Structure formats: structure tokens, C-alpha cells
Amino acid sequence: LLRSDGSVQEIQAQLIVGCDGAFSAVRKQFLRRSRFSYSQTYIPHGYMELTMPPADGEFAMKPNYLHIWPRNTFMMIALPNLDKTFTCTLFMPFEEFEKITTGEEVMAFFHKHFPDTIPLIGADALRRDYFRLPAQAMVSVKCSPYHIGDKCVLMGDAAHAVVPFYGQGMNAGFEDCIVLDEMMERFEEDLSVVLPEYTRVRVPDDHAIADLAMYNYIEMRAHVNSRWFLFRKRLDNLLYAVMPKAVIPLYTMVSDSSSRIAITFLGFRRRLSRVFVLHRSPSLELRTMKQWSAGTGKTK
Image (cartoon, rainbow, N blue to C red):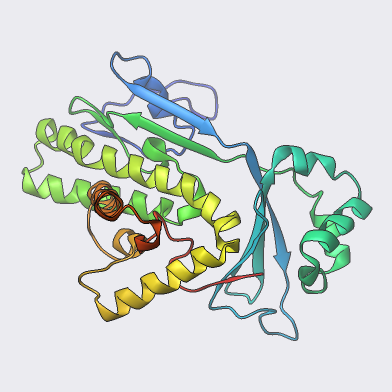
């Protein structure tokens, strides 16, 4: 360990658990080893957070929704906070962010694309907050294996950082803890067995949620503009309400159950493929590959 005074201290441990985030120092040591696979992907879009204050002491919009302003190549979303503000997050290609350099250009952009938000956020706040911080990058990390022998294991973002569009990144980290704890109990804390089994189970699940998150951005910013997509989603929810054991939306299977994500996703794709092979009709597709929100949503 490198201490704050510059000295180096060596510590012996039975198990090192790397939970040090997307740019993990522990994972960096894995890269020195043979047969360790690693990929890091930055998407070409960044994000910027703006604040929508309360209106007369209450939420400025209905709080029980994920609010989305989909604009095909970019979007803005708003989520409620406990203090009755909304955090508005603008997701957009970096080159579009870079085109806006003055307060007047900010206002012109919002007047064109998000005019209903201007009185809610405030013109002065928009001019000020847009330039408070530059647009931030989003990275997706995949690696395998998650362990080295019986001495070290990666968990959370250190093992599988994901982009935020499926809303399951933190849950995936919590599930790492649950799975590792269950395996510690099952294999009587024999780390030589526990850690390889943890890798075997978690790697495909975490890679699946990373892929779901990547694709769901397209659905959120573009597909929700399609009436056909919205019809399919309503039909999906109707069938789920009528036949909850036979028809389960993918997002529900992932977020509201303990089913393994990789198996759920693979089984979903296989069932969907059989529909197309047998009937050769896109009109029979009842579910989209991913849902754009966990529950209800509102597009603007």
C-alpha cells in the first residue's frame, strides 16, 4: 500500500477483494497475467446533469415516472430526488456538446429540442449550469476471469462497469455479494473452489447486463418515438397481466427476479427466434429485446 506520507507498506491477506471501481488498481495487476481477457469501451456519447428545482415547494413534474425526452440521436431524462428536485441528465454525442459554447447557444438548443423544460429548470440556471462541468464520459468494462487462484477476486465495477441505461449496474454489484456469500456457504469457505465457481457464474451474467445496457440506450433515445414500439410494449404488458407465468417482459425477468441474467437473456432470444422461424412474420413479435424502463415512463 502507498500511504499518504509516501511510504510503502506491505500487508499480507488471506483474500484480496477488488471493489475499487471502473478504473480498478487491483484489476490492473490482473493484466500482467496470462489468459486474462479485458476490454474497455467508451461510447461516443457523454452526459451532463442539470437540476430542476421544486415548484412552490412541490415536484415540478409528476414524481412517480421516469421522464424521457427522446430525440433519436440524443435524449434527456429526469429522475426525482428526495428534496423534490429532479436530476435532468442530457445524453448526447460529444461533438454536439462541443458545438454549444455560449449561453445564447444553450438557450437556442433548449428552445429547439426541450422547450417545455426551460420554465421548469430556469433560463438563468441553464446558462450557468451547462458550463459548470464538461460532459462526462461513459465506459463499459468486461473482463474474465474475476479471480486469481484463491487469493484475489474482483467485484462490482472493478469487474463489470456498465453504462447506465438499463438501471442495473448497482444491482449487479449487490448480486456479486449475494452470489459470493452463497458460494462461501455452499463450499465451506474453500476459496480454491469458491472463486473459480464465482467467475463461472458471474462472468456471463455481467457481460449480458453490459450488452443490455448498451442496446437499451438506442431504445430510450430512438425507439420510444415509434408508435409500433409503444404498441408492442403495451401489448407486452397486457399479456403479462393476463398470463404472468407464460409471458414475462425481459426487464421484469432481469430486475424483479433472482433468475440468472445470462440464461434469462439467452432463453428470451431463443424463444423470440423460434417465433420468427416458425411464422416468418414480424407482426408476431410480442416482446422487444429490452424494455426502456422498469415500470411506467413518459416521453416528451
